[in-house]
Length: 171
Image (cartoon, rainbow, N blue to C red; front, side):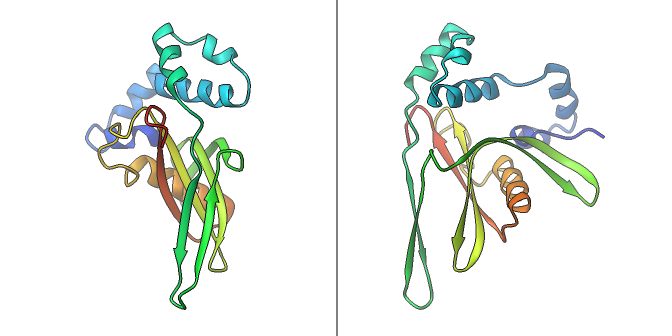
């Protein structure tokens, strides 16, 4: 059975044969750049060295992800603050999404966290993008929906919150 990678779901919505084209071409340059950037942050520059010179220049402009501050407000007036920092994230995690026994999509998410929110496990997923303009829908895109559903199911969470991190904007 063919599946569509989460990063290609937006295209597949309008071009159903995009899964076939992805299968023929293999991994995208964006995914390779993302993997090299994660390796760089872990102290390994080997993969960055294998990039095209223009891609190396681009990755050099990416900063360390800033810590996101998430505020949860409860009906009783209480507030809980969670910090989503790069160090505590699960990074480059392979996830799969099934409907019944059929594989719908699989791919590698960039960052994810599980936090306790109001006594329930909640997933937070984020994706690295070159800039905030890379996805017109922002975090409400099919790619992050697929990653969010898959990660929440994998970690036994009741739901998820999507987010984006812009490499060039460092936010």
